[in-house]
Image (cartoon, rainbow, N blue to C red):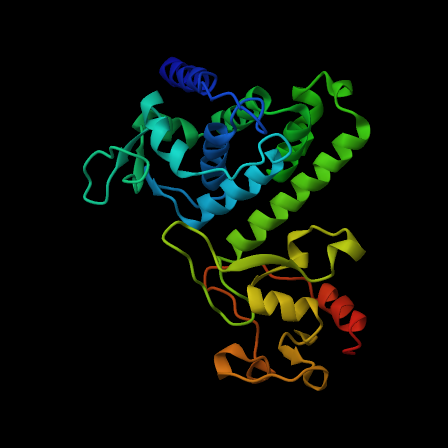
Length: 309
């Protein structure tokens, strides 16, 4: 690494230490999590190969991460986290410039639709070593001990807990276990939906709002309440109706990968696109760029649980 690169990395790590988040009032307490959560979400998108350009928007991947990771701070910050605020305001600290739809500088959170990362920050964030240091720094600086555990776990960084937090005994053992569970659940929610490209595995439907919210959820094939299994291969991205009907055992997947509909167990009426029966014997729907696939063993457990064997 050249001296100029080291200097650039040191500069941006220094900037990450100076986010100056607001202090909570009333039901909210501690440092406001909005700014560090947005930066963690962006770094996570870069880590997963979703963000490869300097300009970014409030797309589904960013919204999914911000909301899911934000849920890990709800004990001390119970109000809804608004992504628009840090999306616009972090421009004042040099991380990016904020733009309106016509490309002009944004004048308010409401008018800000896209941001362009500072060229040096973008180049620094492309470096895996700097990215790791930045994520660990943000988590250590702006979050409580239990939140740190959950965030590290949710981002696949749990192995760094011992090395980066020598005051491990400050966290009550049972609270740490609970935080890890929350972190694994958040990782499952983010990675399943993102890696299935926000597409329902039953219907093939992908629908996202202009604010980045997606119609699909991360569904456990073998229920977490029974299996405690948050492996990504135990997950499917499903829209609301498909998720509910799968959890009710109204459909499953055959050993050869086609849809098995438990037709005798229910009645339905409506357009074909909204009914289950027309999906009988169809293959699961995966977006063309998706490489993640569910483990057939989990479908076997699902069929067995609902008597579909």
